[in-house]
Image 1 (tube, rainbow, N blue to C red):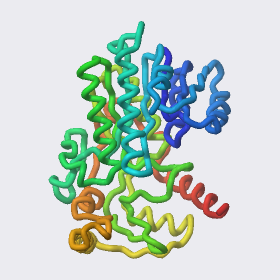
Image 2: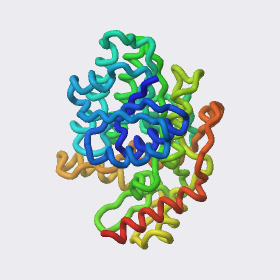
Image 3: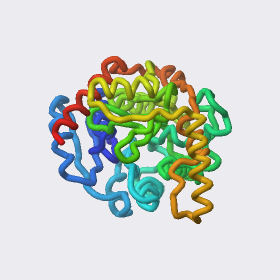
Image 4: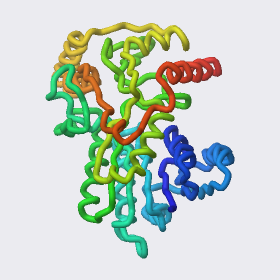
Length: 343
């Protein structure tokens, strides 16, 4: 079986390739934008004798590159997505590239879409949590967002990307499995999710308080993607991905200060965050947009509304975290400390 992994050179993609090899998949096409990221993949593959990594370079914005990427594969892991940049860039690298890939799959000669399984890595950001109120439990039955235009652009683009895959599944008939990770972290990743707070100038505004962080250590997340993506009973299903022992935002920030570096932070309780958001929205309207409404009441409720989370559906497939939170957080902080010392 030939497997395609888009975004194979990325933070998560590298580990998905490694877990595929660990599960016995040896014929893997790694789609990469940058040749510089290939060396690490090739070095890792040497740990798995008999593995065959095919390096495919290009940009999924180009339809011809999508045709090359999808040719003769029967299992697709689509990880490529926009993570930062302007709204146009985020949508181009999440929605446009996904449509290009799906169209290439749909029109492929000699390899019908019906005999192909597609595994999409989506996001917790697709859920419509605001109407549920504070403390609501988020699982796969939670409705998707009805007002993505009121959320951040990343969440909006990921929702539209996922909707696109479900729409094309109806038309083309391929098997689809969707993974919705929470906050992916680990060595190679960033220090803070916005669920902890926001850095504004020299001050970190701690907005998450005692809310649980739906952390997914990158190795555990990759394992979940492979387990769910290849399970015979997962076709047509979506799965939340997060670790078992979830810390609060306060604990995460406290441990960061202890193990990485001291930073100046101000904690804003949720009611004060809502008041600040209301003031920013009001001034945004009065100034006719001269000051962007960085925080709105809707965004505040989505990010810091104090939800709880369930990964029971994923665990029912047999997935278990490979790395406990008690080991994952120290490994992450040690990496961040080393990165800070190099700067």
